[in-house]
Image (cartoon, rainbow, N blue to C red):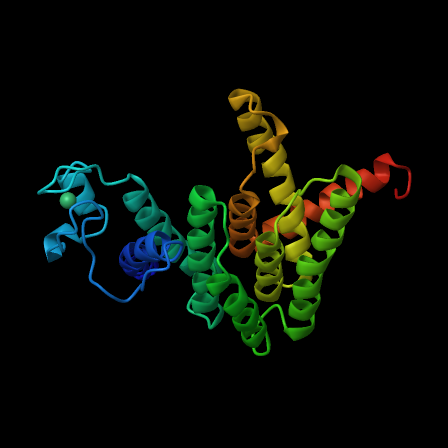
Length: 265
Ligand SMILES: [Zn+2]
């Protein structure tokens, strides 16, 4: 039975992922996400139903438009698969509880922000600002509860903002953008304050390892803008779906540090 429900959610996730692709493509271009129907972005021909089947169509067409033969990005099936896996995984993480649709909605927003930040280095207000409000409204009835959500929202948005302001004063250079703070505020409002804190630490680690590595390879120096939102998205998804393990790991790390520093036994 578990497998059937998870598989159904997976298939639903594939279809939702297909819609997320539309959002990812159109939102930064300020096009409507509802109209017109899916079309080839090169020759503008509307897609028929059998060209719109998640993952399968892309594989059958071998990543090319049927008429103009232009390449269709591999990002499309990847986004669909990731969305499907997160939908299915949400069932094992939360069961059929009211938290399931909330965390799924959160996951969809993180996927969209991840992809848009990676390509355009922006985090659209259309996602982050309603996200902050929706996260807080859901927390009135569900975990993490409204106090944790409110602290998370403020800590997520304000604390990194102050750090970045200090960095700007000292280095005369921007470390993070306003979009990052709004996105972190959204993470805080959905996940509450302990998890937004862990998300921030985790995304900084990811940024140092992956972003630093990419900078070394590209040799373009420190002026390259690192899409920090992509790291926040990955870290927040890990925190949202593996909350108990993440918190446990964090507590052990803090304890190990305090022991090392001689502050605890
Ligand atoms: Zn085409």
